[in-house]
Structures are given as structure tokens and as C-alpha cells.
Amino acid sequence: MNAALPHLREKASKLPLSPGVYLMKDKAGEVIYIGKAKQLKNRVSSYFANAGAHTGKTAKLVEKIRDFDFIVTFTELDALVLESSLIKQRRPKYNILLKDARGYNYVKVSGGKYPRLTYAHNADDKTAEYIGPYASGFTVRQSVADANRIFMLPSCSRKFPEEFNKSRPCLNYQIKRCAGICLGGVSEGEYRQRVKSAVNYIKGGSKESVRRLTAEMSEAAENLDFEKAARLRDQINAIKRVESVQSVQSSKTSDYDVVALAGSTNAAATVIKYRNGRLTDKESFYLGGGYGEEQTREEFLLEYYSGGGIPPEIYLDGEIENKELIAEYMSEKSGRKVSVTVPKRGGGLTSVMLAKSNAAEYLSLKTGRAAKEAAALEELAKLLGLPAPPEHIECYDISNIGESAKTGGMVVYRGGKPYGKGYRKFTVKEVAGLDDYACMREVVGRRLKRYVDGDEGFKPLPDLILLDGGKGHVSAVKEVLDGFKLDISLFGLVKDSKHKTRAIASSGGEIQIGANKGAFSLLSKIQEEVHRFSVAFTREKHKKGAFELTLTAVPGIGEAKAAALLKRFKTKAALKAAAVGELRETAKISEEKARELHDFIKENM
Image 1: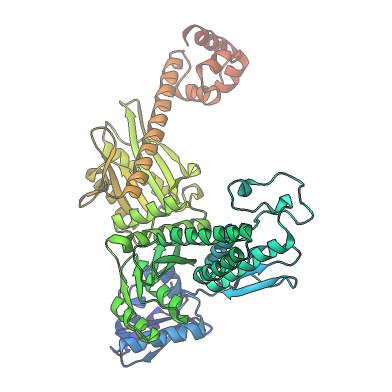
Image 2: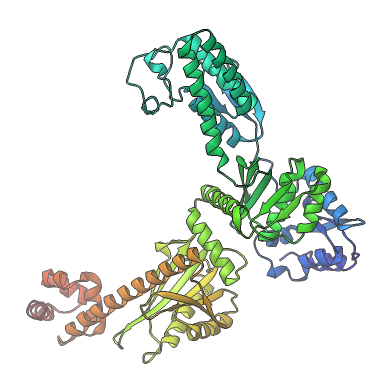
């Protein structure tokens, strides 16, 4: 707990109800977070009023704050402009910063007799020529790939002219994406002309290249150099084909950006740029722990567009609190009207889904979690109203075969995947009769008590507890959580008549999940897994109980001795194969009793 909270609450209570900017400081006096507020007093006080209720990055921030400063402004827009400026100057630790996200990107034209076109992140080869720098690595890589394909330049690792005719040409030659330089049939002069045309294509764009190549083709035809004219015609057609493929990315013809997020506890953002209706660029950023979806989205927008490059339209994958204010700020910054919208249908929504998919894939690379699981957990969090996607999920099921074997199974999912090391088995000990609710209470209660008692095997606590059962099971276990004073999200999984997951049970009723495909698939897998695990343990217990019951028919062999024998030998076959001495040592019985037991096993098992 932050010892400075009483002082901070008192100071915040004296702030004005005016728009402005606040600067949070740590114990060294360093500014660690800058924010804006429509009403300074209300916004700053919210950090300290109930600090224990914060989660994620906000909780970490509040724990570090020892003081704050503030600047009053005339309007909320003034506060937004000032906040953006101060963040750029101070680069506070807890604001979203894209300082390592962008670098310099170049088209590299290598030296030598047969130069190559490649993408480069640094211009550190003194023998090469560089085109750039460009802001986007995506654009550079795409341009290099298009240029090499159009002008049939090699993209392999072979060295020329050293490796002429050393091996068969690769697949690119067979599918007419390379002129087959490795065969030695393209002269050095012709090759350099191809490279020159490719460089012109990259520098001048497709229209300029088509104009230039058309003029060269006409000149070649007039000089009766029909072979050269045919080659130039093919290059012109290739440029047009590439342009045609790129144009189908969007039905819109305007310039716009699409911004989408993935994740919450750990977040990533993707910006896809469309210019003249064509997808021209994509950038992805890892944002780390966020403050919640809306705040993270808003902070990212302000940071990303702080350097300019604002298009007339920006599409978002979700709402932000200050959408109109942000649009006004962007319009003022760019000198023209900028709209910020959340599309609900049509091409805009399609573009948003593409950006969101890219953000999920990028997040999976950064966190080691598959994009499918990340999306399912995010969907589940929204469905259940959780503050963040649940990283650690536990699910419980009760299984029994009459009174002879009553058990509970606990399975664990981490990052949307089964975590076998966390699975636990429970034998129900305290419940008389077949009371499913009481069994569930006992199992979950014992698990939580093991945690409270400091058992390392039962750490950490889950973000979400799921029960194989309905509203009654949820109510029963809620009493246990309340008894331990633990605030853990709790829901039940309801099955249909075919034992398939149908809905989610809460203390207030049922939540339908059919329309949430990712969440539905994940919950179905969890419910099937906990059922499989608990039933397997029940059968194991029942089988073991039957063995024990058989062994206790031998005079002098009670439940404890029978259990010791089964613990060591485990199966009927192992018991039959056991020597008299092994039985005597395990059950701690006399030689005579061991022989009697040995004969009984041989005859009856």
C-alpha cells in the first residue's frame, strides 16, 4: 500500500473543477505519468479514492506516485494539446510511448557487376547505394518484392557471375518470376538496365515507370529491336497486374487509416493505411500492460499521430471517451477536417477486422500466445464483464460412482491453453450422501485453504473460476469465496441435453454464448477437459476401492494395509507377480500371513 495516499487524497481534494493537465511524480520527483482532465479535481481524485480497486498498469502507477503537479487550461482541447506536447518532451514511463517502434528503412542496391535489390534497416554498407530512408518497413519490403517480380530480378542467395550454370534454376525461373540470371543468358548490360528500371519504379511509382517504359518500347520498335520491345511490353503488363491486385484491398477511394487493438493485460496496436483505396502500409506496436481498452486506444492515437501524417478519416475498432475532442484536435493539427469513427458495417468494418487480426498476430509473437487464444480470452472478458482477459482460469467438476467414489477435478488453463502441471485431484471426505453442491463447496474450499496456508503448489489464485454446473453451484461456491474474503470472478458452465456447453451461469441468471465463437470454443474445451479429468479420477478411485475391498477379505489385512499394497503394486497383475517377501515388507505382516495373502491373491484376483 502507498503510504502517501492520505496526503495525495487531501491534495487532490483541493484541485479546481477546471480542465487541465496533471503530472504524476515518483519519490525521486521524476514525472512518471501525464494525463489530461475535463475536471482536474474529479479525475485526479479517482486515482487515490479507492486505490485497491485498480488493476493492471493503473495499480502499479498509483503505488509509485508520491506527488503530483497540475496545469489549468481554458478548454479541454487546450488540455489535450498541452498533454500531447508534454508527453513528447518528458517521455513519462507510464504513458504509452512508441519510442522503439519505428526505425529507418531503406531499399538497398548492392555493389558488384550484378547488384541486388533488398530491404535494409541500416545504411551501413559503403559499397552499396541506398534509397530512403522511409518510415515504413512494410512499404519498403513490398516495393522491393514487387520490383524484383516485375523486372524478373533474382531474390535467391546465389552469387553472380561466380555461380553461372553451377546448378539448375530455381522455381522462380520456372514460374517466370526471374529471368534465370544463373543460366548466364542475360548480359551484364541488360541486367543493369533491369535494375535501373526497378530503381526508377521504386523512386517514381508505377505511373512514371509505365510512362518511361512505354517510351522505351516505342523507341525499340522503331529501331526494329522487337526482342527488347517485347521485354519492355512484358514489364509494363507486369506493373499493371501488380497494381490491379493491390487495388482490390478496399472499395473506398479516399485516404484513411484503420487502428485496432488486441489484448488488454498486454496490448498491441496495428495501424493499416489506405491511400487512394489501396493498402499501402501496416505498422504494429507492442504496448505492454494497458489501462483498459478505451484509455489505451486514446493514448495510442495521440502518441501515434503526434508527429503528423494524419489522414482525413480514421477508423477505430472500438469507442473512446473523447472521440469528438480527438477529432477536433486532429483537425486543428492537420489543417483540415478529420473524422474519427467506429464503423459498424461495410468495407470500413472489414478493414477494422483485418487490422484487429494483424494486432492479435503481432501480440502473439510478442507474448508467445497464439492469436486464436488471445482473441478468445479477450472475447470472454467482454462477455463476462471482466476488467482484463483472464490469464489463469481454473475449472472444477464433481464426479461420483454412488457412495463408493466421490471426487473432484480441477483443471487449469493459462493463456487460453491447458496447463497440466496445475491440475489437481480431490477425494471428497466430508460430505455424506450425493450432495453435488456440498461436494463442490468442499473441493473449492480445500483448494483455497491450501493457498491461504501458503502451499506453493496452489499458487497463484485464478483470475476466473468456472464450475461445471448452473446457478446453484455458483451460489454454493460464492459462499466459500466470501468466507475467505476473496474477490475472484465466478461463473458456471451449463450443458444442454447432449452434454454440450450451452450457456454461462452467474448468480443473476444465464449468459448466452452462441454468438461468441472464440469464447464458446474455449469454454467448450475447458468443460470437456474438466469432465474427462474428473471422471478418469473417479474410475481410478472406484477401481482402487474394489481392490481394497477384495484384499480386506484376508484376515489381518485392514484398509490401511490394503491401501499400502495398492499404492506400491497399483494393478492386479503387479500384485499377482509380487513375491511373498515383498508382500510381507509392504504390509508389515508375518511370513505366515504373507504366504496366506499370496495364495489368496493367486486364487481370487
